[in-house]
Length: 443
Image (cartoon, rainbow, N blue to C red):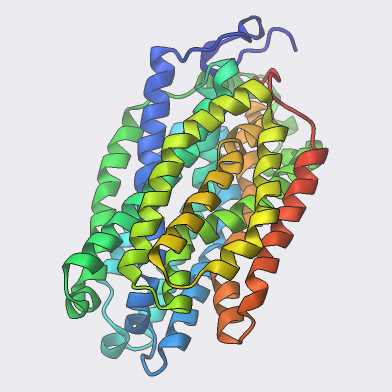
């Protein structure tokens, strides 16, 4: 299609456009900040999981309580494909903006519920049930968030800056995790262990919910993308009896792209959750390093990661998606063994492991939003990005903390690096065999 309307109103004649319009800059800013707030709420769970576990489950065995809490974390991921399908289809039919407003409201509300829920000792079995329901709501929200926000950011970009704009989706995710880690480091480092255990973790959840109001305001104020507006006009021209749901169209008309998005996600989600989210808790539990020190190492690593991420997006816009993603997977294939072998409770060793891993993750995080968006037309883009991504995240990302903890508690910790290296190998095969999409005209 040579005259297809492109992101932010650009046409295929403008494929050499390299600068965001003022409207595009506002859209990227609003989308990124709103996404940051949403991921603060999501990441606070893993940040404080080892602390609040005993409040929702019987505290007789801390290890069992932590595993149960991580199991709820994993179960929350089961709802991500459901949220991706439902909210993705909603965003493809009614707009990216409305989809993003819906997701942030649910995420913040569920965070508030967790922060206010009484202990197991007070309300018994109702406590873990409420925790489970709240996490399912957050999983539903997160599933719809990725597809909606990724489509929104990429569609708001200049054609030759799509990876740069898309990288801000992951900048915002990392910023959310950074803020959650900073909150964790501040609370655990400032207050006594008794205060953190009694009310500190609750304050973190409530604060995260309060931030949701800011994200909600930003998303209400932003304009819808031209790509969606034009896709909606095209859809209205189709007779009602011939219209198909976005989920049906994705699977039937774009099966290869759907499988490709799933494959792209496997290594990225597993390694991302291990390094950017769960590594502080993993290091504290397995090596005995104080959680406050582990969280500080995570904060430093993520700051470096966030600073470099837009530059990795620019690199992808220059040399392509395949080489930058292949460097990520190949690097982890080599790095997995020394990373877990050298982890010994020393702060500086953990910091170096965190920094190297997060630098390698740049190749995935700078590309995931843009390369997934480039697989689908606007009519099914939010669903096409979100659903296969959420399926892979539910299977490989949500279970990573549980599997690694289980391996260590069953004296199989030496196999954790094999687990991570296997994911990297799968990713490397996918990235080397997929078509290059840099420069592809999208509607």
